Length: 152
Image (cartoon, rainbow, N blue to C red; front, side, top):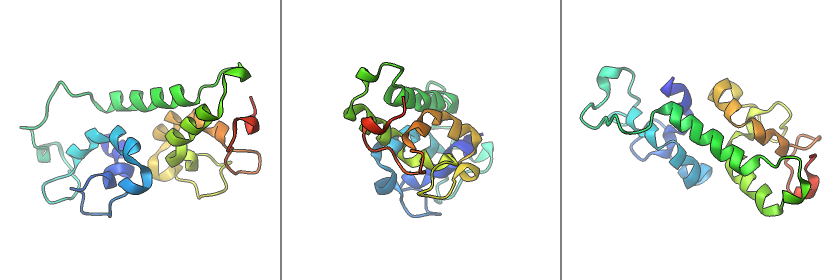
């Protein structure tokens, strides 16, 4: 399960040699959400495939597990993108914050026409964490840019 959640963001780490860095593209905040995934990179820069390969000396049981990371993502999405039914609460700042959190996962939604679907690549579970982001896609399949365009 860790690999399913982490695979799309292993490129955030300089130690990962199987792909170029994506840190500049996806942003520091997005990469930081996946910081626990770095333990899935072995000393040669490849992916750890078995539990035995994990460097158990650095494995700290006090660190949050992947489910906690999923909860953090879901909380970040909720905090940034839940506007409720009170239109007066919605500001351009909130829409921008929601975009910043959702940018890398708008491709999860079939209605998004500006990029091919990434649902098969990142997985159903991860896309579900970003379900509130779908409100940032307008009826033409593009991105909602201002709070006035939101259909609340």
